[in-house]
Length: 180
Image (cartoon, rainbow, N blue to C red; front, side):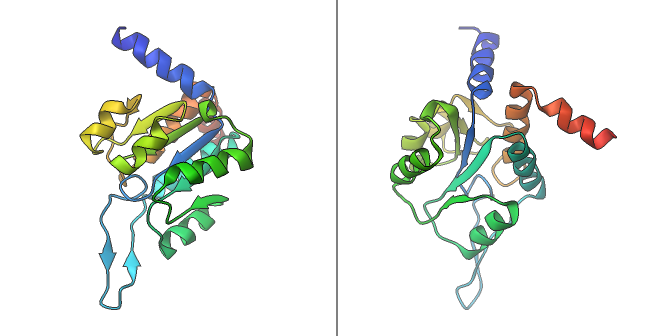
């Protein structure tokens, strides 16, 4: 299969998507964990990722988060973005995925997962489109259908959202809205 044929197959997978599932640490963040002396955890999220999520949701693609860790800052950020399906503290991401699929009625083939580490692999192997951020673990990148150009926490999620919207033909409508 040529590089162009491979990319066209990825675009075809993206056209069918109704659900984007995101990992948090290393995908929505750069993976760094900050703690103060009282044990409070801080995370940094990229504003463009958040805007991309909002735009993608406006096109009818649902967004969910499944994270192995639990964090108040994640709960606050996802609430701010209007993300209804937030699963934290799920090291067994497959159980959360099964519940998510049951709740939404979306098939695994209509879902994409963006991951960066080995914990994401079982889920990536079950979805229609497996995506790794640019700085993901090598084993994750090797098993992904597509890898972003940007690293996690630095706009990779926005890159994914834009790619899905382009594949589904809604991106130009979004751009034109801002040009009015």
